[in-house]
Image (cartoon, rainbow, N blue to C red; front, top):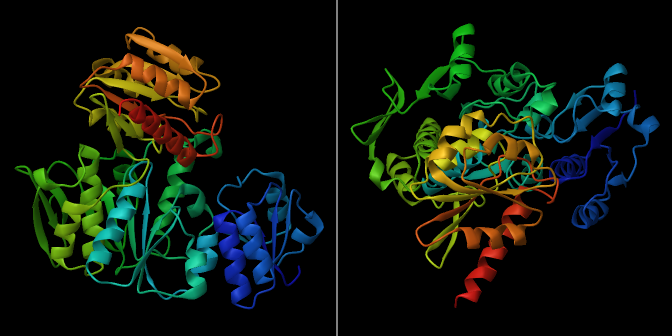
Length: 450
């Protein structure tokens, strides 16, 4: 075993880890078998980090002291198996970066709502005047932040992939928004393995730790029944919660922690939909758990702008509202989106299927959707699931076509909803690229009517 840290993957996570290692005087080598974006290459060169792209130098990698694995690399990748066989420790970027921070960590995970909840939590804490950063699976990596400063607090959005290789890292406050089948292709199509990964967010918890969780979620409650949790529990639910936690009573959000009780009228909540009531409760509990002033929490519930690509109102064109929900990459996310709609929906869906079961959406889609526009290379599963349940189904192969068809299928008072239920990798670089193209097409449409 050598004396070198090897970072696998040259995206935001891997580049951040390599740059932090270099800044801390650690001998580091980065390897990516794909193409590294030019911006990351420039950063690595400027910092003097040795790296390669388009290949893996196995002999060098298999002589590493430790390996930082980027979250997109699956456990069953042949190189990962070889590293395991050699007994070389594999950790995540979060695990590595955490060694260089004394900040209090709020970790937020879940199948749906984690981006909104993390951003909302950050919004409240920042409003309260604390030195806080937002990192993890959203925007800037934790490692990159720690190159220049170690703030008082971090709010981390954590995917199941990031949680897989965390061992000593501790989230002082942990949030699980909900659990539903997602990324099952990564977990041998076994839901329990996916849930295992999510519950790693409770690693190293003690009696001072805080766990905030959805008391309506059957899988979370089943796990809670099977474990002896040592810390402070704050459940949240739309119905009554006994003791501390958050719930809805008489059209009021009621939030109770060990030290505070906050009530907030639902008609003043910044975001609509039952799922956003849950997201707001989770964010409030997390913010209060790190001593955010009550007034900052209340103001944050009122004035939060939401998250790009998550039920984002793009524009109204000829009386039709266009909504970008490109981040909805699984069935549960789409269920929440459709549930919040109160007008006839022209629904754009499709992409790379992740083992979806569309039966959950059949009743809701039947009630609310007038036209399904399939946007993907292979739409057979979508078409089969909703034939006879949605009046009209149309296939398209580009975002321009999808928006054009949506415009023809809609009338004033309707909503055009991009909420794909699938990953984006068949026609787009990622969900952000998909959402950006949708917005561009809507703006083009808007210009035609001006």
